[in-house]
Figure 1 (cartoon, rainbow, N blue to C red):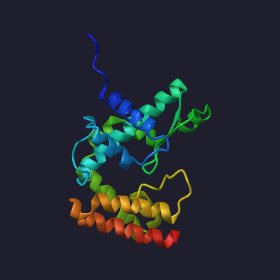
Figure 2 (cartoon, rainbow, N blue to C red):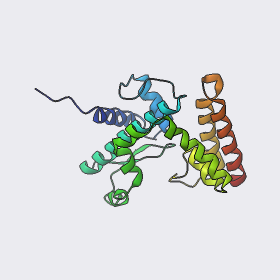
Figure 3 (spheres, rainbow, N blue to C red):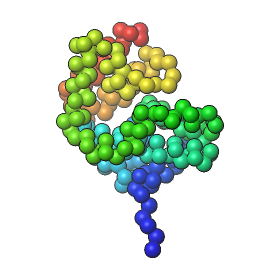
Length: 198
């Protein structure tokens, strides 16, 4: 009797297939939409307007990406650039492995306890910390974190920030089932970032 394939490995295989079809890379949001279009049963088939659904979908996709990255390195068949704004398969480079050995994001997303232990209250804390950091003077960092641009691999410019802003507004607009409070937070973050990047 053959064992069933681990669902996480199945999701990483689906992600790999989609990345092979898009050699220029794509955003996390675009990847999630493609997975949904192909009726992937490994991510929630629910609107991303619910904070907990959004977190769980994001976590599962990033878990699959880090599994795939480790597999590609082990096989020396490729490398994977992982960022919410740009996910891309790249050629294998022997020096890249050293860069990932102490990657806290990798450790976070490969630990399924972080998925199980994060509830809606914890997700809400992430939004609350955004406002707390703004009041504490870390407004630029908080705004970049909200936009998931704080660890961008490339130099940021206003064009990239505006693109991400439009994605978030599209996701969270009340006319599309989003949350007005979340949209106000996104707008405030954009105001802050325009001051720094104009």
